[in-house]
Image (cartoon, rainbow, N blue to C red; front, side):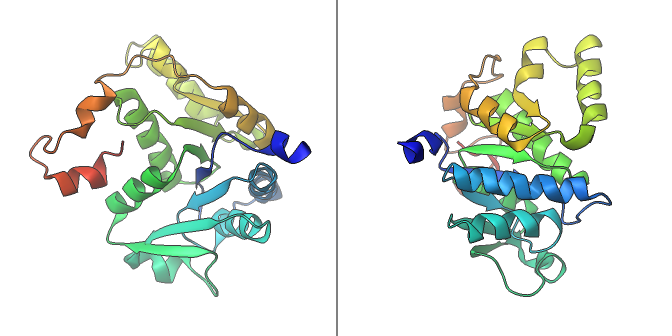
Length: 220
């Protein structure tokens, strides 16, 4: 009974996070907490494939907890982001575009931990793809100790200045703890207006791309 209660509607969650640990222990603690919450809910992990920084912490935690770990990493980054033994299944891809496309395709939802430019870019792309109608998956932001407060304030400014529609401001959910965030994500129902119908992204050719290229960059 307790095990059934712990199970999530998400089978696999993609986590975007830094290849650095950050200067404060609170960030490492948050990665461990998120990993333990995924294990508690029997959720497998999809992530950037690195074994260093926050990536290494969460992947090892989920793997040690008995859940499947899939790391997707461009060949060029393997010497930089993998140190020692790899964790779980590691899939190498050609470039960053293919990495994000594969991570999105393999996941039921997305969570961003604190990170640098790469983490923020991945988060914003998933938000954008949701706005465009490319995917219908839940996006969560783990705002550890207010790390993303300024980014959230920028989004609010975008609404106030007319660059972000008020409904689009709620494409994602945010929370300060992993437990609260996953609970919000479980209950989330999209309410924003999509720019284009989800089905329109299924065309064989779109904007000059072949079907193969489209599959890499635009994920259903």
